[in-house]
Amino acid sequence: MNTRAKERNQKCTHSSNIQHQSNQHHIDKTCEKYPPIVFEGCIQYITEFVDCAFVCNNLTEEINRSKEKVVPLGFDLEWPFSFQTGSGKTALVQICPDVNVCYLLHIYSLNKLPAAFVELLCHPKVMLVGVNIKNDLRKLERDFKEFPAQKIVDNCLDCGPFANQRLLRSGRWSLERLTTLVLKKKIDKNPEVRRSKWHVQPLSDAQKIYAATDAYVSLLIYRELENYGELA
Image 1 (cartoon, rainbow, N blue to C red):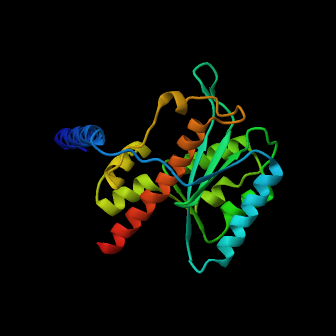
Image 2: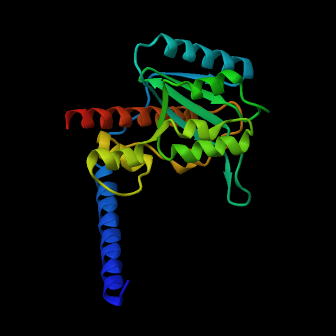
């Protein structure tokens, strides 16, 4: 590549970065005027291995009975974080199958994941949806060696790239910004809750609502984008 071509390429990249930053700033400012979104359905908080397996088995049976070819599940993880030691072990798995219920599985104290949990996530009809979801699944594999992350990564959907595809945009998206862009709502990302001690049982009501809302909003964003694509 000659010098002029390099200069043109650098200018294009610089211009693209400026446009991306401008768009993100606009979205951040717009967020302030939108109403908050909070999960108001039933939150099922599970802390025991047997109960986790029971819930996952029931969900699998529901999916087997479903006539849908693809069943999206809002999905997210939470874990403790320390500036001294970094990311801790995965503490919480959030699964939101519909707008009325969200399951919070507290897995921090488990030595291994229930087989029913793995079977649910590996189900051929299940599509996990979330933001940066592939990194979450790999994180789960690092914490639980038997978890087959790659098998599930191939059958999940990251709402960020999906938004770029559906809305003909470009950029890297946080859940907060996608909520503003797609749902025209504001999600509470209170840093005190986000950085709280997710490994300590029981979770507070604020933690439960925060966690459930993340998975719930991921499901709503997917549904909205999917409908947008069909209408377009």
